[in-house]
Image (cartoon, rainbow, N blue to C red):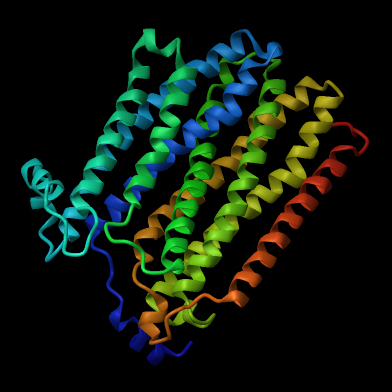
Length: 389
């Protein structure tokens, strides 16, 4: 590594302050909880629990834990949202000390500030609407602490789902009209990256929390958990594809050359994130090619003992590792600020027909690879059942 080049390029890179690290990481943890838990509940947990063969003690235990988890995500979202709003104020305009930005009066003044010249809407108004929706989302989820409301957990989760998504989508509304197609695409891919990433991480966290109930589940719980893991594997695969495609666009916009990944501050932080995400994908591949086929074979053989061991012992251990890696990604996010192109003095990225064609080809290759992955995992699951699956 050229240390002189690294020093020159990173001279313009500003390390985030400690409060920025905490507020941004906390905010995305809050989003992951609210978005990931509600989407995973709707697409994975609820359908599995509604299946006729799962009615009984196991379903009751998982419904109760799901409701408690969803309620706590509302509390976390509310707290994280408040500190994130204060962080926005501390960074706005000429800035102010973070401690001062926590004052409710200052926050209210910020949210009521008039629109800047040339803006179609005041930035404060955007954040006012966003935080109003955040407050409603948190209240809906936290209502699950009330026993009478818990009986309607399905309806509460389905109500909170679009609200949770709106929290991040509203915050992305630009105060000024984007000047070109690239700016519109930046907004679209950024939100795709956020939503798919939070669904992925938040879903993993919810399932790990539910797996913690194994001591209260019956010996037949393996069948239910096999269905849960199968359903979430499909959700995770879609999220990986969306994270990859959107991440490639955003990386191309901010990184002008591969060498900038280790010669700029932005690039180094991004490289760390890429390595962590690669670890997540590797763990997911292990699940897909090793654990899921064994679960499918045990399920087909009606081997309840092996099924229970695989779904509630082996699988959660791997997922715990994925959750740790996912949280590490969120810790790195505040360091990915600015642009490697700016630090290195590279030209601004400009899209073209060639760029779009390359992107479409990459997306097609990704879709084909996922199809091949699914077929390979299916083939592995059809292998003859061996003793001690």
